[in-house]
Length: 255
Image (cartoon, rainbow, N blue to C red; front, side, top):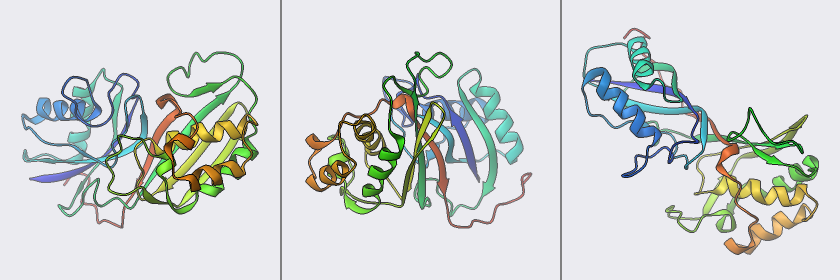
């Protein structure tokens, strides 16, 4: 049996999230069905993160164990063949040691939330960004976001259905940058609470619109009350960008 590390991108708007569901399609299910179609094996595809319904990925990491003698290049081509025409693509595959685990070996997870700040409705980016028609002050949003950095009790930004054992997390990095009509909020941390990034985005929008002063973010964080949070941003604009791992010795691409 060999373990393979997968680099995956997907459009999540027609899926119920990463994790396999009983009555709705998921990214994990699509991948596991592709594995069965390729080699006839029932295997669990373990992901670095469990994105919610409608959330996308540019660089999700997963791993899968396959008994059939094969190699990384064949795994990539075969899975892509059997995934088509689903909007899920395997960008790269490497054989890795059994010590690697996509979820438990991960030391940081990176997300970006995309906002398009324009009056006109979205056409090409419909379902892939959050359109805000009123002007946003991205500099004020960035200033406010800095109050979120560090180790905090993030109860205010935690969904009521979150299953994490503790609301205390450490946010290593967050920034808000504008490029024309596109505003991106980027952040990374070892792990996140359910809806934490979307809650950040929704609250920072209140600052961008001028309804809240930047310091309000510090106040609602300190409140440790979900009711203090702004709206939860829609999943359309959220992307899993990258997962970081300690150095791992890859096996040959043809191993």
